[in-house]
Image 1: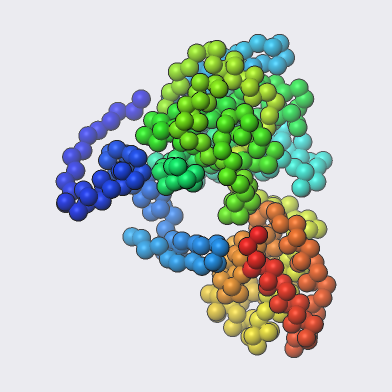
Image 2 (image 1 turned 180 degrees about the vertical axis):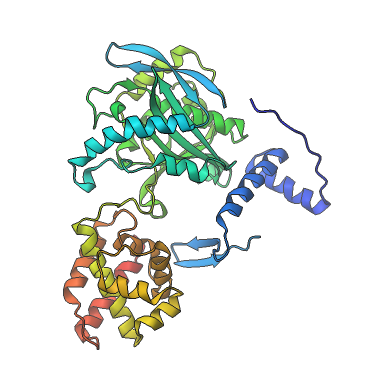
Length: 70
Length: 200
Length: 155
């Protein structure tokens, strides 16, 4: 099993509210939400190169809109 | 990397033999794929029309692992028995559930899973080993539990495997999805995962 | 991740599984690596569709390429060479301009596996009726409209 390291995270009230809301919605612990966010960000960051966009597609309506992302 | 002891049914002498499930595919495993699976699959496909070839016959596992092996959102598994590669699987852990009762909750999604050509009745009759499929589903469920996802798992089944996922594993069938080349999507709830783990 | 189940679990599990096929996963976009007759026929239809659609608009190939944000060469190859494997990105952008299903355009282009047998029939029917003259005839117009409809229907 790989070694684990601990980090302390300071959040604003608003950020904590969002974190708690997501934890309840996703049925995850707050730590679970943060880890999920980390995995998602790494995956998306890898894919978004200059000249490419991340799109949300509604196939039923044949609509696409850009997902704003860093 | 972790190694788990599992067992496969060896058809030749009707015994159960020890196998190893690794939670990371290595270059050695990929070399086995290249040297052992690919020639057998090529020989089988060579005489067939394109539409009759196994759906996964052209899958390039080296390429797949090169694309996602370094990402936290993916995990790979290799099954070894008696010195040979018996199965490969890649799962992701950033997709969401579609079944209404768990809609939007994260799941472990089986991106790709395959068993060795000699374990497939359409290629080799009788098959050499049985049981790899359910071992991989067990691994996906346990990964899901470890992530805090409660055992929730989803996948798009290849057409000839739909019966296996619905009847032999207890997945709920949600139907074909045009976003995934009309392959049928299956999903398992936490309760269904519990039943699977009890072999029910 | 480590499994910790007794041997009896796997014995029972293997008997449940039997000889069933277990594969899961979506084939990659370029899965149809071998070109076959079906791919060529579909691409002939796709090429004619692209040409007729832009002629109906009064556009030349360069104008269509600019509207879609792709190379003019890609448009010309698509229209003229059924053995040319188009770039997935180009097909996707053209589908946006035409307002049709990108996935169905990808099927016609042979970039994803054909899972719509009716689409191939529509493509063959369309290709048989289309003809390359500078102005669309009424018959070509009707044929084009029917094919756009087939590409747009959610199915």
